[in-house]
Length: 144
Image (cartoon, rainbow, N blue to C red; front, side, top):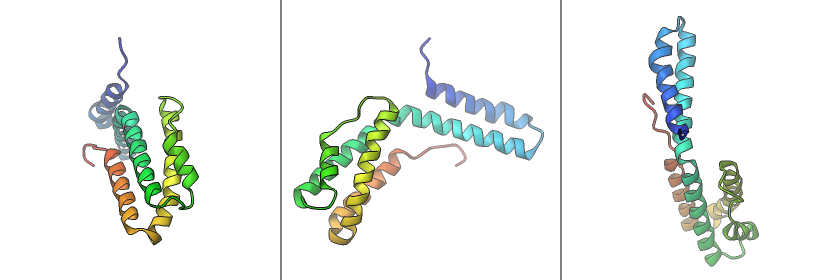
């Protein structure tokens, strides 16, 4: 049997919500069961898309940093952004993708702070990236 973690987490969430929560005897237990169910559904969604979303963000940040370097090569943090553009995750584990992704986000924060006062077009491009990042990672949960 091939394990399918996203499906297993979603199935557990549905079982909790439909079979166990209605059988609980207190509002507190029912609320906790509902919360656990929603968290399992969120984990199932994130498990299925985690690598793709991290890689899409990394690609978008590298493109953003490359464009910024072309127009503003001397902005503080240029070395970190250049290293990020030339780099790659150490591997395909989510922890490795997360570590590299975090380097990009740290560099993005510095660039955004500079762009907010020096380059409105770049600042808007950063906001566009942040919107795309948020939409990619949005949870679509029932009842939410």
